[in-house]
Structure formats: structure tokens, C-alpha cells
Length: 500
Image (tube, rainbow, N blue to C red; front, side):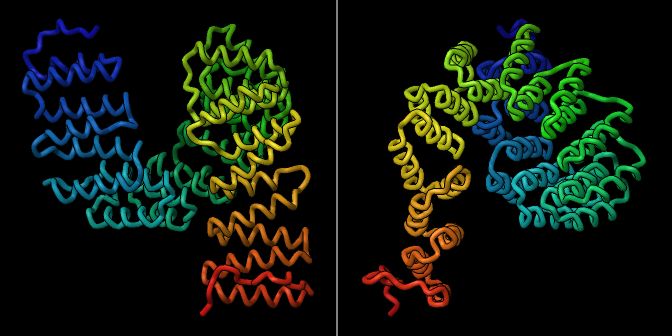
């Protein structure tokens, strides 16, 4: 129950009740009271309402948007809150749509708090063209000199690997803070220039924990665990992120003894650090140790999240224990975890398939809202292992029929024994789905496997013809002649396209 006993003589009396909300339903009730009290035009109160609602339900902003739409002449603060919420949860197109509406309909101008949200959305989508447009708008509005806007632009260009642009923004800033320096350093790391990143790190007038952790993460990503450890040892203050990053680095390097030793040194172990340890054991083929770590965590009365459970299911897949698989699935159901989440569903399919429960694996697979390569591989491998080869072939054909061509390509590449028939089926599917780029890649592999099979050349020729790439058709015909490949009698280079 919400503390409605508070006397509401002003809008400020509603604010503590609003902040006490525990569910979206509570927020709906508070909004009713806001309307009844006539406070729906109180900009400060509505701004708090929008922020709190967005935190509760970030993927559904229709209700807070309708509340915003009820405000006459919303100020820039309200616009910025709604813009930030959209940029964190919605598509880039929807973010720009709201931004366009702000510029058209309102009497406010975008400010130094508007642009960082929009730039961040461009960074997340690696949308270089759109980000450059926003950069131009910051220059026109005079906000490009702000340290937060500048830092956002550096981060954007760094993520897009346009490091020279990031450096230009950095050099043009009249004042830089730790965020600006760190953003450029991370940009260099993303571009693979560890030396430049290290130089920048050494030049920094001041470093915060994020700076140290970003440098350690960059070195770990490059596989330089030795120097990452040296940096870790010189940190003035270490937090959970510092420990977890290096634990992950040791795990990726295959040194689980060092990973465990560092984990044991961690004073406060959170779910992220337990997840790093467990996934490290799984990656290094030590599923039994991963299960032991899970038991240790439970003994400390820590409730696992879905990422830890995915690691546990991966460990169970390696062990092949149907008894453990049944216990895990029962535990997940009791904990009310969302089985529809793609990575959770995929892990469940893989676990059941590898532990021999193909009936359950098939049921989970068919119920998946979105099937990815991992889930297809798990099912096909499970069917093959348990003597259902014909069903495995049918499932592979189904994957192609559904247009998952790149997934099929990756699956064939991962097979221990290459299947000529699988490559041939995929080439046929590339023609069916008009995928010229992948068709060329598949055909090149077939030319290596079956250099004198004219059918593969003819099929690629038809893919080119369907796309009106006639120069490619003639070039491929010449290549057949050079290699001494003879056309199949009765089979045309262009069997479904009329040139004339």
C-alpha cells in the first residue's frame, strides 16, 4: 500500500508518494491523483513522473508520452527527459522523429542536455551519417563547446572507429574532464592502437576508476593479460569491475587458477563476478567447477540472475547430466525466470538436446519467439548425436527455407566434416532469396571442393543473371572455359531470365 495518508496541500506533497511507487500500477494510481488535484501542468512534478515511469517500464513509453502530450508548452527539461527515455530504449528512427517534433512544435531549442542523448543513440547503432548530422546541429546551436556534448561526440566517433574525427573534437575542446580523456582513450583501444591509448592514459591530468578499468579492459581485449595485471596492481582504488575484468581476462587466457585466486581476493563478490568465474570454467572445459561455484554462491544466499543460469546450463550441457538438467529447469520455473528471453531459451534447448531429452528440446525450440544460429546448431547436433540424422537434415533444410542463410553458412563452416550437399543446397537457397554476396562466397567454396562440377557455375551464373549482373555472367563463363569445365547438356547459363 502507498502512503496516501500524506496531506496533499501542494504538488510537493505528492512527490514523496510518487518516489515510493513499487510498481507501474502504483504510478497509474498516482497519476490519477495528480489529475484530480489539478497538477498535470506542474512541470517539475510531471518531469519526476516521466523519469520514474521510464525507469519502471523503459520499453513502453506510450503512457508517459501521452502524459507529456497533455502538458501545455512543455519546457526544455520535460523535452529532455522524454528524449533521454526514447534514446535509451527506442529505435534511432523514433528518436529522430521525437527530435524533429521538438524542433517543429515547441518554443524551445535543443540544448547541451538534449544532444548527448541523441549522440549516444547514434553511438549505440554505429550510425555514422546520422551522428555527423547531429554534430553539425551542435555546431549551429553553439553547444559543441560544452564538455558533455564534446565527450559524447568523442565517444561516438571512437565507437564508429573514426578516431581522427574523435581526436579533432578532443583537440578543439577548451576544457576536458576525465570523461573526455577516457572516451578518446577507449576510441584508440577500439581502433587497436594500444600504444596511443597508453600514451593518452599516461598524459591524463586526472584519472577516475572508469579510466583505469577501461584501460585494463582494453589490454584484456588485446590478450595482454600480463600488462593488464601490472596496471591492476598499481590502481589506487579497485572496485568489483576491476576484479571482474581481470578475472575474465585470465579465463580467456585459459588460466583459471589465476582467475580463481583473484576471485578469492575480491572483498565484495556480486553476481557479475560470480558469472565471470562460472563462464570462465565453462569456456575452459571445467563444467564440474562451474557447478561447484554455483553451489558456493547459493550457500551464501545469493540468488542467481539469468546470466549465471545460462552458464550453469552450459556446464550441464558439457556434463551431459539429464538429472542435473531436470533440476535446473525445475529451479528456473520456481524462480519465475522468463523462459522466452532468447539467450535463456537457447541455453535450455542446448542443455536438453545434449543431455538426451530431445522431446523437451524440440518443444522448447518450437516455442522460441526467435530462433538463432545457436539454437539451430544445438538441435541439429542433438538430433545427430542421438541417431536422428534424417530429422537433422530436415531441420537444416528448414533453416534455409526460412531465409536464415548466413546462419546456415556459419553452421556448415563449423561442421567437423564438410558436406558438399549442404553447400549445394545453400547455393540454391541463395538464388531463391536473391543473395548475391553470400552466393558468391558459397560458390567459391564449392569451386574448391568440386572444381569440375558445372552445375555450381551455372547456378552462380543464374544468381548473377537474376540480379542483372551480366558482366559477372560473361566473366564466369570465361572462367569455366579457362578451367576446362564443360556445361551440362540441356542446362542453360540463364534458365529463367530473358536477355532480350
